[in-house]
Length: 229
Image (tube, rainbow, N blue to C red; front, side, top):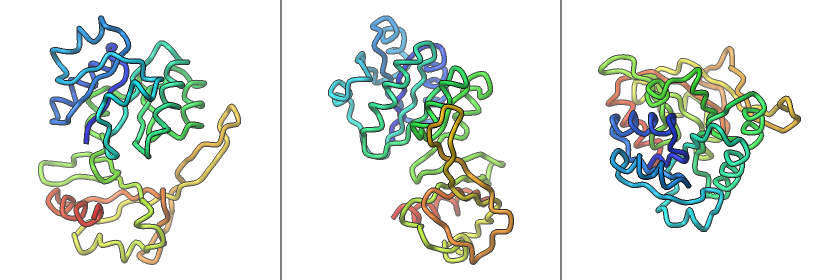
């Protein structure tokens, strides 16, 4: 899995530095030769291209499990056009920076995986919750345990919590929420999560639901191997 950062300004470079330090494979994209020149000593693979052009993006070896990070802050229009272009790829998660509430509402309407707010989320905190293979986010509890947020794929659709394999890997389900639709402030349909107050082993999981579990890192790894096969 590669993390493809589009926009190599201060926020994009900060993200790249933290991601590389955490061991992720990072690719950088910007349409400014000056920014590419600045980034090339830090990021092993950089491309100077227009990310609103899908043909131009074809020079990047994009795999189905790669994640896009749109880190552009100043140009609202370019950010939206880039996200719209990236949506044409086969389901790659898109994380995008929002500079104001209007920008955030449009990104919600485009159904990005996560909206980044540098004023609230430092690059270090963000990297600690970055998704890894298996459509999840991880937060370290201690050296041996983690809290994992899974987003249910079609493979889990219709399966109950009790039949999901959590007990087999000694994972404790802490929270579950259901994916629902709503209209945002500019009338676009967006998605939100509503917490299931009294879930049980008989609660049915549907595509897009969120499940938060806690357990030992080794058991989480084993479960994810099972989950992704």
